[in-house]
Length: 452
Image (tube, rainbow, N blue to C red):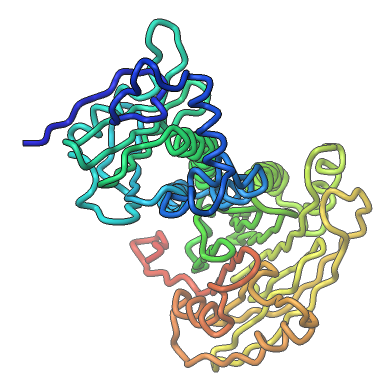
C-alpha cells in the first residue's frame, strides 16, 4: 500500500525518483548543461512537458513576469489564494490547493484547482504547514517535497513573507516525476503569493481597527426634550461597514428647546471620522452656552480654523422651539432641510448659507421659520440627494417632490426617503435626521403639574 514519505529539506534533484546515472556517465556539470539545453531546445524535447520548464528555462523573464502579475490583483486573501492555485495548475499541470495558517490554526484545503482526489492526505499536509519554513541548522528552507507510492507526487511550498508564515501551497499530480524547474517555479509562485497575502491581512487588520474606532466615534445623538421626537439613519457609501465624516447630534437647551445638528467632514475613512469627533466635541461645549445658531457656527469656525490639520466641514443647525412652534436655522455650507406638513406635502426650508467650518471666514446668519405641532423637519447630508453629473437644484427638487401618507411615524418617513432616493446605492455617506414637535400633556396632581 502506498504511503507518504516526507523528503529531507534539501534542493530537489533534477531527476528525482529516477535511477542514478552510471558512474562513467555524465558529470553534474554536463547534466546541468543538458537540463538548460532541454529547456531552450527543440519543440520535440519540450513536447508533452508542463509549462513550468518553458517558463523557467526557455521562455524568459517576460513570460514569468506576465504570469506573476496574475497573483495579488486585489487586497483580498481568498482571491489571492485562488489566483495562486489557478496559475500553479496552468504552469505545472496537476492539482493545486492552499492551506492557510492563522496563528496555530491550519485551514482545510481551500481554493482547489483541479482534481481534489489527487491531493495528499490533509493530515500530512497539515503537518507540513505547521513545519513549513522552519530552517534546519540555520539554513534557508527548501521546498517541502512529498511522494505518494511510485505514481503520484506532491509538493508543499510554504507561503512565507519575512518571518511570517501564512500556510502552504499544496501541489500534486500522478505519473511524471517532479523536475527541478517545476519545484522552483511553484516555490516562486508561493513566495509571491505570500507577499500579497501579507498585504491583504495588514489591510484587513487596519480596516477592522478603523471600523471599531469609527463605530465608537459615531455615537448615538443625545436625547432631545420629551416634546420632540427624532429618528436617525446612517448609511456608509456603497453599503460598506466603515463610517466617514457624516454625523448627527442633538443638544438639550433651556425652556424646552432642542438644537439639532447634521454635519459632513470633507473626505472619508478614519481621518474624517476623527475630525468629525473633534467638531462634535466643540459643538457640545459651545452649544451648552445656549447661543443663537449662527453664533455657535461662528465659534466652531474660529476653533477649527486654528487647527491646521482639521479638515473643513459643512454643518446645519436647527434650534427647535415646540413651545413657540418655530425653528431657527443656520448653515455653514450645508444643504437646507425639508419640512413635511401633516398632509404629507414636502417643501424646502430656506436658510442663509455661510462658508464651511474651518475656513475662518465667518459670516453666518440665522433664519426663523414656523414649525407646527405634527410637522416633520428632515436634516440630511448631501449624499442623500447628490448624484454624479446632476445639478444640485434638480436633486433637491426630487426630494421636495416626495409625498407621504398622513400619520406616518418618523422611522417610516426616513425609510421612505431613503428608499425612493435609492440612498443605499449612493456614492457618498448618508446621514439623515427627522424631528417632529408635539405638545406635552399635563394632568393635575394636587397643586403640582405632572407631565405624562
